[in-house]
Length: 171
Length: 170
Image (tube, rainbow over all chains, first blue to last red; front, side, top):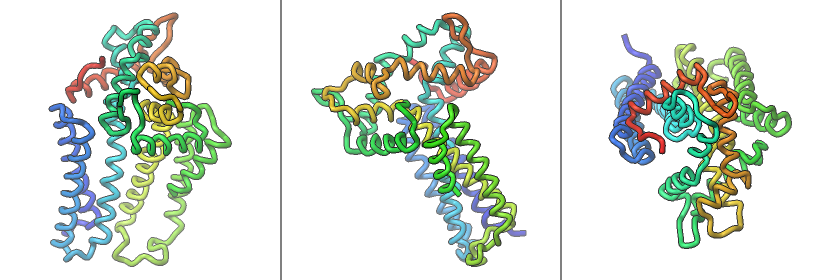
């Protein structure tokens, strides 16, 4: 019995994506830089997926199904990635998640003003500014912070989306 | 169909926006899923031009992949784009910096001018309102407290953060 080539491709994608998730978790647990490690481990696993899919196709049918297998592998892997990353970032950076966890660690209740004192502060902004500088979106000079060309492009793109969808100030 | 979805979402948000925009977008997604399923069942497998080597067989696999790709395009693409544009904290900082002529931007300026001049307190108030709307927390007098749903969510999130050995919040 031979396995369907598309099914074989999907199994290869799933296995390598699980390897990526495992590597990413190991990286987070050992405190490697999240963004760099995320991109590096995904790129490595994506390359390994493609090599596996090509090898499987060559072994099965001398590469006749490559034209179908490669797009499916790339697309499936990309879809899994775009579903995975937002979930990770919610746990890593969401202020709503931080609020729930803080409340849980204080018997489930806190004065509203204490929460504002904790999360609507200069410290939170300072932390984000450092992240944005590290990511290359902002530059710090003697006068303060300014946008890099990369930061300006991203800000304009999202400002356009906000206008297009009439989202108001947001944030 | 993803392009159709984006077009309908754009029209809906521009002309018929509701208070719960994410729910509105999700309803549009389900409408598009119905159209997609109808299109899948009413068109020929090869669409009249695809070579047999490019067809996914069996049919259930083709159908499942179609739904998966479209679902990922919505939840990982369109809805995520909306979340970032509407609630992205760092992105809003970048937009505020881009839209001001003021030089010498620092943390204090952002605290006061975040969200197009609304300030940081407004930003956090929006998060609190979101948690209240989803019934994860409840407001009693001056206190905010977790609901049982909020407790369960917090326990799961706390367990995940501990498993990932993430540093406690500042």
